[in-house]
Image 1 (tube, rainbow, N blue to C red):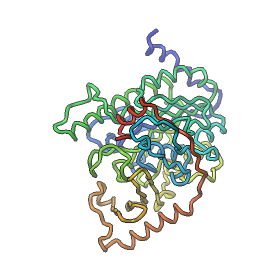
Image 2: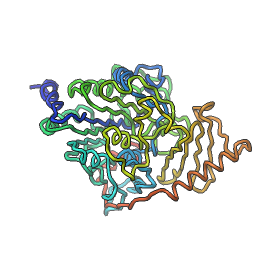
Image 3: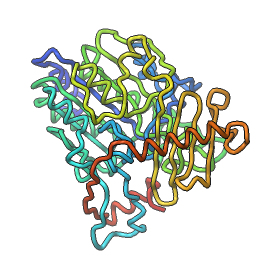
Length: 425
């Protein structure tokens, strides 16, 4: 039987459950920018299915990652902690120096003492399944904590392989309500130029953007197929987001991992609840991807874990976003020479180095593209100093968890993969 037909035959059974609790699905699309999606205002129809889905769920218009590359950003989604709290400082892959390592070097991992999203849901009676196609989101780095089944494919493994793996898990998935985590890297550098969506650009920048955009409808169609086969319309909490965004030379860089401007920090966040709850809401106040876990916990009626730094988004989805207004949101990167901290409070955003020698202050209400730096202009000095102080106080005084270090080696093949993916230069 062809694989496609086998999938059709197998997947519907995965939706039959012996519990009234809904399935929960978390999809992370690596490097997906919010502003390259139609329901965030993009003029190209890059995601027809997700656009349809957005009309039946809640769209958070200003959602932000906790960091600008995969490891710390995904760790924050999994734990509802900022990177400087769970000590997921994301050891720089450039430590391999572009060569196969002769001996292991130490990298950070999610500590055993930190509770993950899979552990929370497993304790609530869910069967837990996870698939990652990102080198860093691996069992070696603690991302399999709480999962009954977890598979880490090589970088850039396509959606078809992920879906084939899900078909093999079908028997296990039908045994009860399940939590499913999927991390797609189809959109990640190096960009595939996918027909029929790719159209050559007039210059290098336009061509890169066209190549990037051509992968979005490709993956959008794959997610639609999975949605229909697994019957997610029938009582499933579905969350679609990204670990971080992607830059196209707006600030002199392409890719991600370099700074905390919105190109790499702003992400989509779409949550569809069963029975039409939150349908059609477009929520304005700022939110963070660390809010995903507290939201699920609240929806299931679980006692809030004191570990959670994020806030539940459920009140906003039910029409009352007051708990999100005025709230500070933080971001952090410590990666080689790229060392920045950020605080976002309503429409004001401050970015600074730890030493304070580079500072950026933006009024996103009047300057959403972060073109006019108001730092040190004399007019917003008090605001700048107060926001910087608030960030430093929070980082210093917030709860911290142990840092777990694990040995890691790169094979020559992995080094070549990391070069192609832009992690090693």
